[in-house]
Length: 114
Length: 110
Image 1 (tube, rainbow over the protein chains, first blue to last red):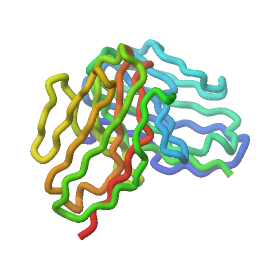
Image 2: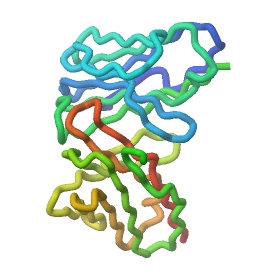
Image 3: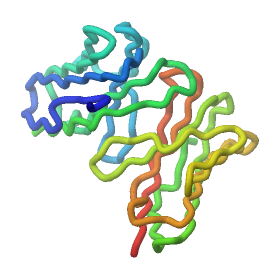
């Protein structure tokens, strides 16, 4: 009965490849997010969707493309992977994009680009 | 000045000690505040929200000082299981303004 689940947990791939990470939440939340946590442990927002609509798109390269087929799913596709993309990617959800809604995180996808 | 700043630590304290962390934020319009806990190689998990009047949850007490723009977390009677990184989170008014601090590492020794 995992609340926010993402797959895969580990992803090792070579530069130039294309890969996807999937995320699903069963909390009935309207808003989902992708965060990136780099080697210095900073958590930075990449994208946010509210009811399948993109509401936040931070300065992320075009190689990253989120897709939300429904409000319970938010996938992340990455084209032409680069060494600098190596990080832990967390999916999260909240009841809404408003103030006071805490985030519930998935267990992360550790991406290593070689 | 960073939007949200925390002392990175590490704080290394004996079991049973009381330990306190502060977190400062730069946006005076920030509206909601949280403490998250992140264990090594795990996801962040909500520890507690921080309310204007201060709030307590068992051994944990959170306080907000809007005038000085900081929040604090106090852990009493610390346990070995409290060892983790504690992340301060400030919401400036929309999903895009959820700012995470870089975290304070706490290590409790027997």
